[in-house]
Image (tube, rainbow, N blue to C red):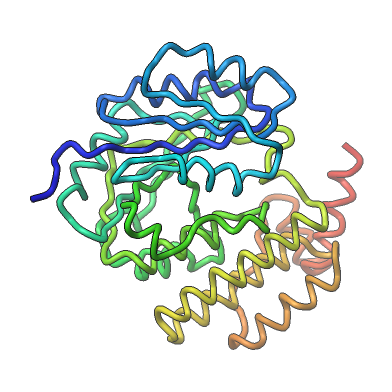
Length: 319
């Protein structure tokens, strides 16, 4: 018989998150679901992150400090220190709705090898009035590979870590975070989890408030090391999907995902762009159009996407 009130471990890596971490912690310890532990791994922060985290007076919070080794290593350390039957990875700058965990636990506590997903929307910096809920027709109960296939039709997918409630036993099969990765490390990690799960249950009332526009965040990095991480993570994630289902639809998704990489990073790092373009060809070609709107739409019609991309970069660099 399954326990109806299982322990949930919230694993939070934190690096220089002093401006946001208190709000993130409050959203966890203020959950309607109380049988949880919050494990914070301070990844060698040089600001007030550690002080803020340790100032909370709640027995469910445990804070550890390590040398700075990156988000993946800190997340893995938090997991190794956890005891829960269910695991939620949670960034130190986001916010959970009050019933988030309770609603997800209700869906899967008695369903072995299943995961729970959630709703999400963006807000910018500290202003919750900018929050806008993302509405997606793919948000319903379904096989995980179908969720992935539907979510990745345009070469992009939202796999932010807090969206998922994952049984510990799935993580033992999928493996933990790849500590060699930084940018879009969640692409490889959560695709591995999804293809190991039997079914995905969606909780519409569990809402992630996803903070965007944070200076210095992983998603804002475009160094060669970061972009190589993105390419590697895409390659690993696509391989995991193809191992699960080697079909024409997954190959088309693979081509579109690599094409999206090309659109994102052209003309920087030409060796990586060339590798991605070869993958597009290997998987049968892409039908993904270069994203345009407003002035970009006009420029694209006149000059083509490559020159339009260069013009956008010049404008961005002059700001």
